Length: 311
Image 1 (tube, one colour):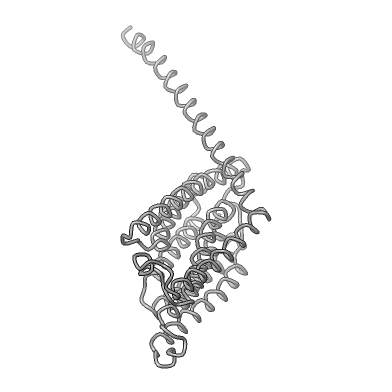
Image 2 (cartoon, rainbow, N blue to C red):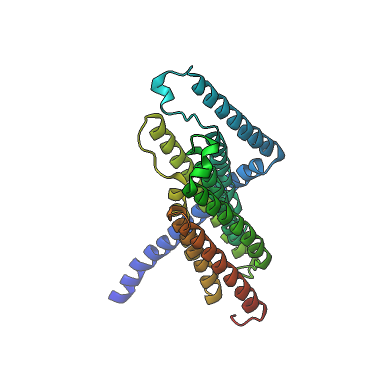
């Protein structure tokens, strides 16, 4: 008798909890779908021809405007309170143009991630190669006059190291893309779609973080405070986003080979982050190690999947 009463008391509660749980799942799916739809709209605009032309025009204007400001500063027309923050070296304009370009490349990374984890990693290598090229021009900006380069051997060696490092990574990207094989994480179409939707949500979060870091850095700069290293900081965020994708992928595939590959890509991001802050020469070596690591991982991942050694 007591057991029957207990059952009658418990079953309605269990039924209510199940209904509430199902309702929460439905609400969560609707939220994910809504965020994914906003992502699709942003991606459509970002990848459009009109936006590409606008971005290209913006970079050109930024470059020419920075050259003009430097020249005006050299003429002495800018108040000293402001002029002390503006360089007299024309090569700083090139560095500034590269910084603007890098901002747009990082934004592009956000729109690559949902389509391919391997493609997003290739984009990270692209960004590192551009940063190394920027560093070469930055060394130019430290030289008072271009004719002094012959007498500044250290600067010349640093420029050469970063330039050839960028070239090595550029070539490495070719081989990485050549060996990258795209395989579905699951055979179920619905689960594959859900996984892609979750990656879009992660991309939106990355976009918000990116814009937040950009606003914070700009605020510090305008208030003449010490700014942080923007790209290095964002790469730390990428490391955590890569780990998050690894964990999310476990919901759809618990295969060792998939887990190892995605974790390896996350480790490659760590190596790229270390390369960004490593001393000259070492940054190139670490970048090369990252290229070789991903290249070997791609080659053997493709062979293992092709021969179905892990099912």
